[in-house]
Amino acid sequence: MVEWTDFERATIQDIFSKMDYESVGHHALARCLVVYPWTQRYFGNFGNLYNAAAIMGNPMVAAHGAVVLHGLGKAVKNMDNIKETYAELSVLHSEKLHVDPDNFRLLADCLTIVVASRLGTSFTAEVQAAFQKFLAVAASALRRQYH
Ligand code: HNI
Image 1 (tube, rainbow, N blue to C red):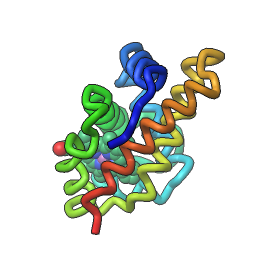
Image 2 (tube, rainbow, N blue to C red; image 1 turned 30 degrees about the vertical axis):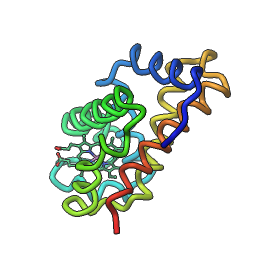
Image 3 (cartoon, protein in one colour; image 1 turned 180 degrees about the horizontal axis):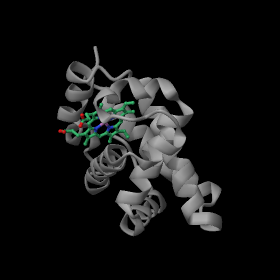
Image 4 (cartoon, rainbow, N blue to C red; image 1 turned 90 degrees about the horizontal axis):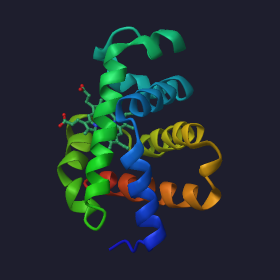
């Protein structure tokens, strides 16, 4: 089981409690689709992803970004049991969506960048370390049902 320090727990909970899931999710997913264009292949039914402006303005990207963030919010509420919390979601991404698990890391990096830009100077190195640890644990739980 993952061990969390009091600082890590408090930091993760603080970041998510103040987060605008809709906006942060939207920007993080849009960034991922622009910066790593091969991730667009999973969203063939989302319509126009032609360029950065189209991606940002696509309402399905906005909606799905929020879904992903709410998914992460579930892990925040279950920090001691992220594996179990994500068991079904892992099966879905593996067996149904066939998402290459390397992409979890790419989306996590885009999310880190969006959160860093929102938090400004309060996103210290220690806060970043806690945040990235959390995302790494979430990504590893999402990878668990791949075989
Ligand atoms: Ni992901 C659906 C959570 C990363 C592609 N994804 C979901 C759903 C949640 C979710 C929640 C909705 C499930 C349902 O309907 O029951 N995804 C997460 C989380 C991460 C993540 C927490 C990592 C932080 N997903 C990714 C990545 C990709 C991805 C990196 C591809 C690049 N996800 C999808 C696709 C769907 C999806 C595709 C289905 C979308 C749809 O509605 O058609």
